[in-house]
Amino acid sequence: MDAVLNANDILEMLPHRFPFLLVDRVLSISPGDDPSSRIGRKIIALKNVTINEPFFSGHFPGLPVMPGVLQVEAMAQAACMALVNKNDPPLDFFIAAIQEAKFRKPVVPGDTLMIHGEITRDRGQMIMVRCEAKVDGKLVSEVNLLAKVSPKSERKNL
Image 1 (cartoon, rainbow, N blue to C red):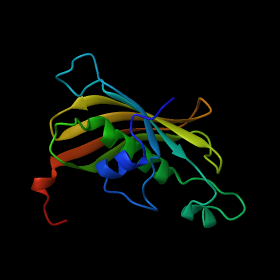
Image 2 (image 1 turned 30 degrees about the horizontal axis):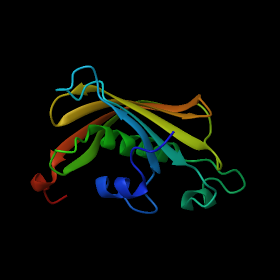
Image 3 (image 1 turned 135 degrees about the horizontal axis):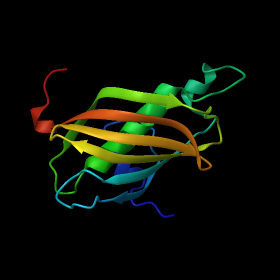
Image 4 (image 1 turned 90 degrees about the vertical axis):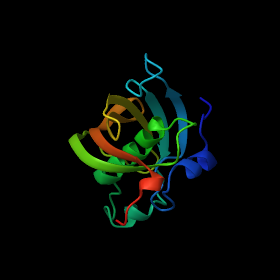
């Protein structure tokens, strides 16, 4: 499957950089049933997990496992890209809540994490996204993410 967003496109959309950029490609972004709403928008993104990831040296020596919090972060980064319309002003995205996170199987070097996200609620600046991560078609982690979205022009001192 060809990428609809490659690494350079992702760098333009997300503020994350090495070692915290956790999405390598976006394979598809599809609209929901109602084009005037973000509800139902879906994304499929890919993260290649390599032994060169900086976290593997300490998590865990001799038994490298991708931390669950980084799986959630990869899903959040993919979810952000599902929200963006090309005509939107630049946006900031922040995780407001992590709900029902489950980690079903370890993610290890050599795995390809396929991230699936769907916008399930849209309250303007608060968006709910249901995300799943799969390796070889098997569910490895899932989460409901509540994201706060605001135009970059409204950025306050954090």
